[in-house]
Image (tube, rainbow, N blue to C red):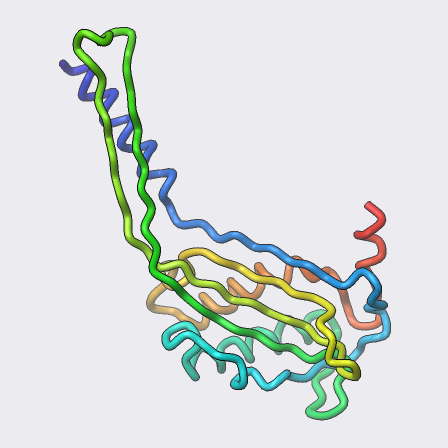
Amino acid sequence: MKVIINVFALALLLGMSSCSPSLMVRSDYDRQTNFSQYTTYGFYNPTQAPQDAVMGSKLMIKRMTQAMTREMENRGYKFTASNADILVGFSTDSQNLQSVQSNNNFSPYWGYRYGGFNQTSSRNYEEDRIVINLYDGKSKDMIWQGYVKGEINERNRKDREALVYDVVSKIMLEYPNRAGFDNMKAISRK
């Protein structure tokens, strides 16, 4: 009986660890763009995009703007309010999801005579998404997009600024360019 309890506890632990929150970061870019031509940035009116009530609040937009300012300036770009080479836009959304996991286990120690056990668990959670879009300042065509999705809101409820800086930093790791330097061509050759 003790072996059964230990096996059950291990299966439960493994099942719970597979549900732990993680962030998925992805990006894409226009392979025809010469990123070395860009040295300045501005913002592409972030309040125009429809925003989620929680993730897209005015507080979150302010944090996102501050985080993107830091990221762009760390890459050597200079802010300008008009005629910027790159326009930064972002949007947020969230949705309620449910994860259901079932573990059907039949063991040779128990055999079909004694049967196995079926462990089913479900978990409700909120999946958030932050999308950062970079546009060419002249043509307004999108040249790069990066996003993160996962349980962003659950990560750090107290220090929202640190949360946003961390998430934006993770997204911008996917954008390898610095002002006046085109690193995208080196990446596309790989």
